[in-house]
Image 1 (cartoon, rainbow, N blue to C red):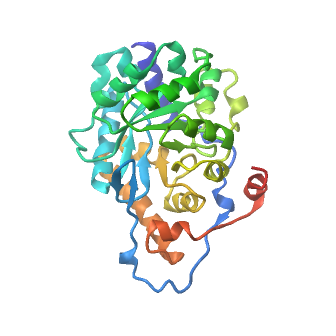
Image 2 (tube, rainbow, N blue to C red):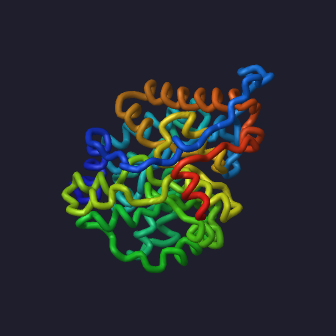
Length: 343
């Protein structure tokens, strides 16, 4: 099995079987939504619909780009896509580097036949730009799977602890700017578990990117994942990163483009807290991956659970829709509050 495909298989196995939880908090335990004891509304009237990148979503939820490039990944992606289509939410695929290196792997990312209407987001690693990737590879990533947008992922921490990881991160922002200008599809920039600060967010916005996924610390630690792949320094950086709650607030304060929240979001209440801090939507990974390796039915049930929990949180704050809910500012306490005062 080629190196990239082997690494993809390793990642799935490790995330499902090993303790790769970030040892720090995503910050949501310090976020208190204000309870409304008399909501004066019917639960059935709670409306979670939003518009993102020109498409309507039934809820501010996206399935995070997780995998591709292996036979198991093909089954997982199809379960995720079918469930997302029926739930009316969006989905990203994992890094398409394996597919670009080997066109025979395209089927492991192709889900349009089971999700014809879903917001679908392709995925390219930013480190590949230093190796010669450009607009052409990005267009291939989007158009080959009939995606609606492209996510460019930032994973410097993961790459640096990998024995075979990419070390050269020069010229990334100029490459992102060129892709955003010439691709012809919306571009999202996303981290992979270490967060994005306000200054980086400003540079991303100035490059013409349409949204930022902060992907903060508090969920799966990809440095911990690499420690199970024979990285001698992976665990040293297990706690590295900006907690998701802090990253959301920081980026929301710094830029005008939509902010997506991911990292340590395991249920609808976590999602509600992220949205109350300024996120337009949340991307969710590990809970859905665990379901998708089993079946489409479990994946759909997991998505429905998350959306129902979000609706309950909205109802209990007296919010009929997402716009109204975003006006209900939370109380932030503890360490998360201390960090936010310094941004």
